[in-house]
Image (cartoon, helix red, strand yellow):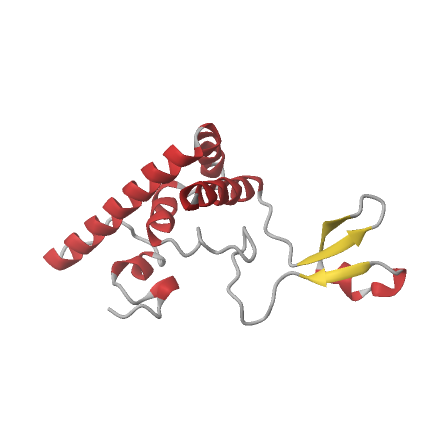
Length: 155
């Protein structure tokens, strides 16, 4: 069940990245459809029209720009290393979306495995004193354990 939830989150993450739709930080209640709709801070500040607004993003809680409060994809170093290498241009996300839309679970397994290979290659090359294959500012984040997105993990 956990893998299915993560596969669904992966699909939503890639879809949002492909379409350029970040997670909304504010929502408003629409009485006509009896549901919450995406909103923004500018609309939420002008509450004089009687609409009910709610801030989704909470200070102090982790936040993913693409999934909101669900940070399981953003916290996965293997997937982020894979995305760093495979999605260099914005249109690359469309190719990844087609792939994940066909089969989420298979894409999750394959991309995680490829991400672990990338991380292992980086660590092996760093141990051998060679240049790392990822030449970007984010590459330093994935090199050593205990740094980057999961900085509370001890080395």
